[in-house]
Length: 91
Image (cartoon, rainbow, N blue to C red; front, top):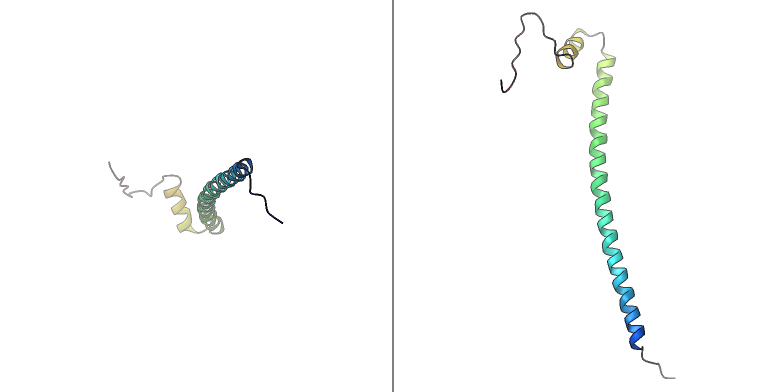
């Protein structure tokens, strides 16, 4: 039994399929890289939010502590104690 050689059309179709598969794989790789970059950025945002929540929870837990009250008044509200000097960088 003798095998037939593949015709030119068959070769073109196989070549086209190989090119299509290669292009698809390259595009998928680019999408995966973009998704990983997004994932890293989102993880950084989550870490920042967790830190912020922990700081706020600390302030809530220590709301009756005079030092915490003074820190909140100074940092969040811009208040100062009488006689306290405030230095602003760049001014």
